[in-house]
Amino acid sequence: MLIKRQVYLDNLLVFKDTQVIKIVTGIRRCGKSTLLEMYRDHLLATGVKPEQLIWLNLEDGAWLELTDYKELYRVIEKRLVAGKMNYIFLDEVQRVPDFQKALDSLFVKKNCDLYVTGSNAFLLSGELATLLAGRYVEIKMLPLSFKEYASAFPGKQDYPQLYKNYLYNSSFPYTLNIKRHQDIKQYLDGIFDSIVLKDIVARKRYADVAGLERLVRFLFDNIGNLCSVKKIVDTLNSSGRKTTIPTVDGYLTALEESFIFYKAGRFDVKGKQYLQTGYKYYAADIGLRYNVLGSKPADLGHMLENVVYLELLRRGFEVYVGKVAAAEVDFVAVKEGETAYYQVAYTVIDTDGKALERELAPLRQIKDSYPKHLLTMDVTPPVNYEGIRQLNVLDWLLAPAFEADN
Image 1 (cartoon, rainbow, N blue to C red):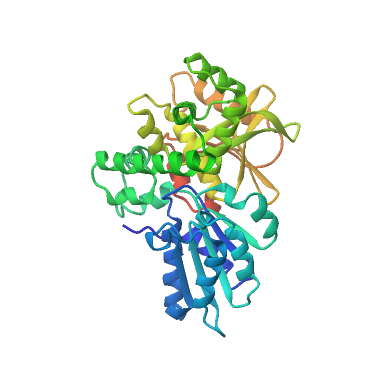
Image 2: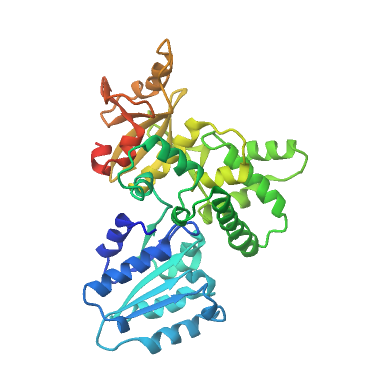
């Protein structure tokens, strides 16, 4: 089943035929290669000739021996069509050491339009960022949104059940082609092993694979909880196997670089400043969380918080955890100089109304005029509490971004 990733496709089209390298990053199997295939099909449908397209999947067996950037450049240069624009697609380019030098050499040619994918954030760090500064745009890709996932089931209106499936069966696109959950689990095992063993252990040359996996389990089990490196180290040490702050700090960086976890820092709403202490980790896919932790109970509110966090990233926001005096706002979302606040709760329905008041209280302490939202799974009409909009979160996830965030 093929889900059209229109938002990402539109991002590529904006930069078509421009002197900028398009770099698509994201966790393994989130759909980067398929996106480039969709874009390639669009080019062919709009008059681009097949000979103008150069495609190298550098994890394909045909190219595994291509490990030199000079040879990479020569392979591509031989295929260039003179006098026409050439569209060059390099999938998982980080496999080739010093690949950025080949990109730089191709970039200066006026008839090369470059598209690159990678599964590691270090793709855009260090020498590459320096060498290609101002010459590339990063398109950050995530697994399927709930809206994209629901589009695979046209006519099916049982969105609460779809949401449960979305969490449990994963948001990775290919899982839609797998019928049995035990087969989905096997597929997710493969993704997890590829990330941990190939993207992290092999690249970083870590010896303590068990220690890294213990950290991953901790992060999956603490989605939505404030953390610090010291707290993580103390918790892991209390389980019997010793580790250190530098070791855990390195592991955390590697997990972020492989896009399996995203870190949300804290923002003091009243002081209008970013805080250096405390942060939360959110998973790129909740299905991986269930796969790693098995039948261990999940906090449904924190799982929903995770979904909302990723959706805000998809909509182009920078996302922080908000501090309001001693209270907390789940998310402060910032985009193009504008701010919006989001509080997330699975339900605020109880017998005495205290749950609703507890969720509204932090938002009420914010005195600026930026939009404030309370998102819940409760099936109620939209309500406005003195400027705070309560919305059904599934309606918010399914709505066009502009309507949902205004």
